[in-house]
Amino acid sequence: MLHSAILFVLFYAFWVLMSGLFTPFLLAAGAASSLAVVWFAVRMHVADREGHPVHLIWPALAYWPWLVREILKSALDVSRVILDPRLPASPTVVSFKPRQRTVVGLVTHANSITLTPGTLSVEVGPERFVVHGLTRASAHAAVDSEMDRRVERFERVR
Amino acid sequence: MSAALDIASWALLLAGGAFCMVGALGLVRLRSFFPRTHAASVIDSAGAGLLLAGLLLQAGWTLVAVKLVMIGLLIFFASPTATHALANAARERGVSFEHAEGEAPSKR
Image (cartoon, rainbow over all chains, first blue to last red; front, side, top):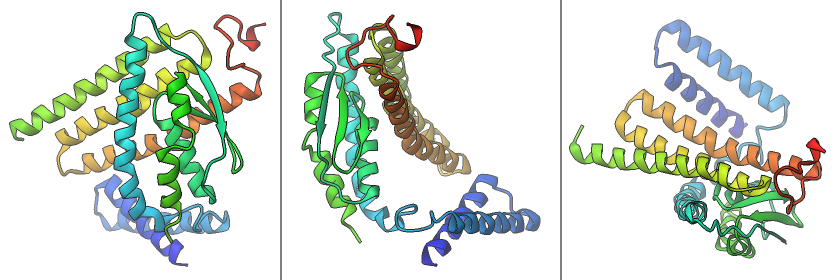
């Protein structure tokens, strides 16, 4: 119920901000649409802790700035490889067991790996991640990484 | 708009544009499927992100800024998912991690 209420507020805020018009008809239409979408989400069983993890918003705001720094750092690494006349790419595949226990944690970890240039999650599961790296170093850096530990701490927040 | 904000905005836009061009160059230079995926991810993580940040500074506190943030969030969540789906599908279809361009299974 709490999730549905928060979902409604977010949908309605989204509607108002996207439209930027405040006529009574549009405000009412927005409320009706938001209510309908919340109803669909409840019927599809996605308005829960897993489908809509609002409790993770604060840890996410702490994790994202760190992730942005990682993205920029590895973007520079990949750019260096691409611009080097010798093109020193050494594509490497590694597999390892992630530390996360929840679906949201696993998805966050896998998406973070893919978002950082130079590493790419190819197979994802609770027992095994298969990661492709542009260089040997970038692939091995994904195993037992700082990112792994940070996402593990992130998913533990209640 | 202050000059400092303008300079910061231009720096972000130029850096984003540079990453997009490096990514495009990588798509051409790298020789097989998986390495090319890494070049593409330079474009949609660093390139698009920095361009959006630069535009955000130009927009200021307006509804346009909110829309730019929404586009950013969409890319932030959808692009790694799509890239993963692409890589996973390539793997399922038997694209080997070692294969070089010109011997894609679909062309055999």
